[in-house]
View 1: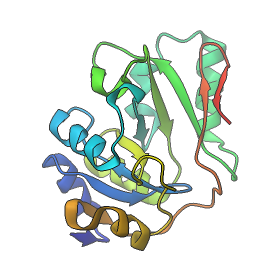
View 2: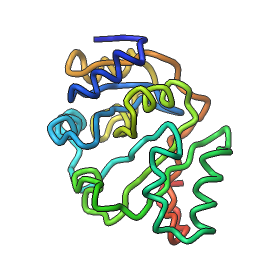
View 3: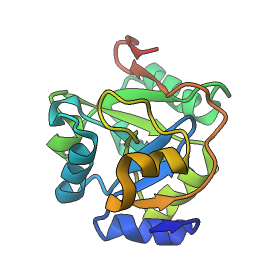
View 4: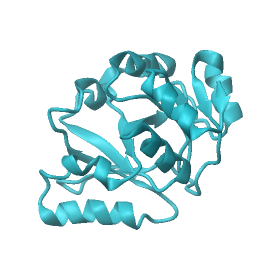
Length: 188
């Protein structure tokens, strides 16, 4: 299914289906992070090992507030500021302490979870319609370039999933990834 309806796309996620959708820089694959079957389908589509973990994408800080509680106040404020006032050229994903409620398959072999609060209007609307954060991993098989259009995503995956059609954001590069506790740059 290809749709431009955020409500239809959110229903697909709620029904345990995989969705391809445009993000700030590239197309992403998403699902309900608590639905292990849907998540395993993403790994199979991407030919990605479970150990790597994935990013969780939220439409508002309130959807991930509980993940910020274990940070010191300066670190917490830095994370929030980066999400409220993101640089136009690139979004920021933060590695945060993962609470017990984050499934092990989301974290992979890591003790932390990667989280991004997006300002991309379509992604914000999708997370709100879904009522929470979703999985966000680039729409491409391992070793291939991430899809930058509906056409490229559908060339990779055909009718194996659903598509929310829309425009990419203005970022030229995928999000940078930083560790909120240490400040270490994981992906620049």
